[in-house]
Image (tube, rainbow, N blue to C red):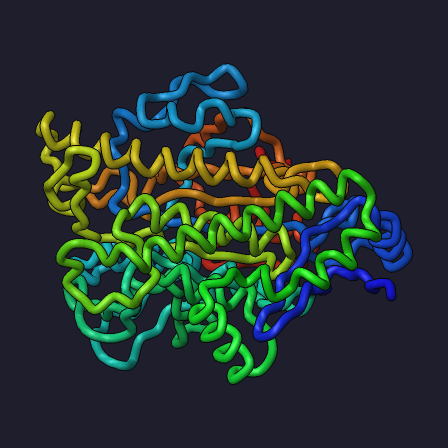
Length: 455
């Protein structure tokens, strides 16, 4: 009996539903359907999914070690950009983007809360520590609203922080502004998931809640992989695939199992030292491993077209996490107020480089995965990486350190550094990205137009 393939096909078992990547064997039908109905929203010219990801790093950067030299294709990387330099042809550095609504605007202190809150919304948060929070819909949710029906999950929201929706966090601002990057409406944040196990089970669990729980309990009791429960379906599919796709299926299944093992290992060997909060099983002891597990799960979600829109808060702005593993025992927020002291600037540069290494890892994983049209998932994506502050000592909301990776399915220029010359609303970037998705947004946040440098 043959398996009817489509973008939403799963390998199924008890409480398990392993979504599949695209295969060359079935590409003809996919392209034909796209041609017959015109290019659907959220797809490339070849009929592949066009993904968007928004990743936030906290507390700005050491600008002296970050700003590149020169513009155009012949620019020179600065010290903390070196980890991802080998992917130069896959991204575009854009200078002079700004978030005017991250500034005080007469509201006094709270720059970290405003940096976090305005990053994907372009809106000034209402200064309150009560229940009357007010912000605006974030760009990922605008996208999800228009193309989310094409996938299992309209969007995914991830974090390496705890979940907080209330309380006071920064100079009279609600914690909701700092611990939530994505907003469904002006009063409703999208709660991010910080536990890799929960993300894994969400992506690969299937059936009713009871069936998922039963499947997980059985796998845990018998110490078996989720893949053991879908092998019969996998064997049936494998017989229908061409040689290249058989190899791709094997590599994909191996990748799923590797992530599963890493999650199991983190559960076995415990939690971070002195986390200061109750953390559920599945949180790795190493912050870097936590980030990379989440990045790998993002790649899997994109590869299987489980969603086309993801936001990832690596850490909230104002985070005072220490980085002992790279020789920085001081809190990040503390040293970000460097006062131009060389020792603080050097430590800040080390942290910036740490985050740069995570971006390099993500780009590498995205580039290694191929869509059925022969292009990488990175090629068929738009990835925004950056912070809501530039110089953290000055709480500067201009000259933001922003990288746009991926070629948008061939619609975005890469390999260059563009200096826009003066402050340009970051929402102009989001408006330009929405155009690539086929959306017809007139304005977003505080946008004033499109970014011509992106074509």
